[in-house]
Length: 158
Image 1 (cartoon, helix red, strand yellow):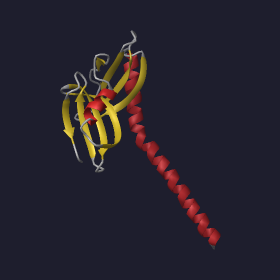
Image 2 (spheres, rainbow, N blue to C red):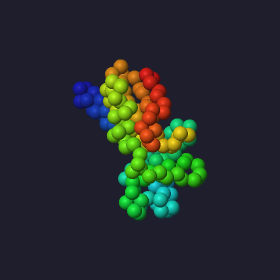
Image 3 (cartoon, helix red, strand yellow):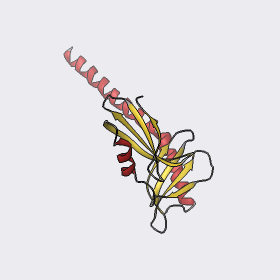
Image 4 (tube, rainbow, N blue to C red):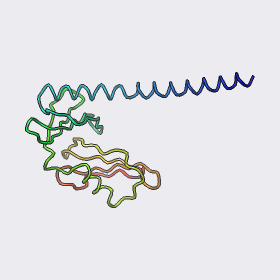
């Protein structure tokens, strides 16, 4: 009887792990597909010659930010909208970096864990979105303008 209980518990544990892996893979599939389409579009339009990373940025309009270098070796970002609208590109060499934006945003905050730092396009232009958990375990979003490092928006204590 003890062996049956051990077998059933082992099988259920194995099943739970397999289900978690399947859920994670299936859940990330739409993001991966959208990112791949955006990268292919940026490459086909010869906007970037080398791509470092790409990620989905969502606010009022969902887009994929593709960061890399152009043919001249200059760091650039391309913002590929979810619809087949025009791709916007910016030169990153005269903009605030991700590390600088985090420093500006978190200088006054008590941070427990930084979740992500993403570059995205808003009505004000390119902004860095910094998401973090504060010491009271509350979610916070801070937006820093990439052109000069000024605060654009804060969403605190969610």
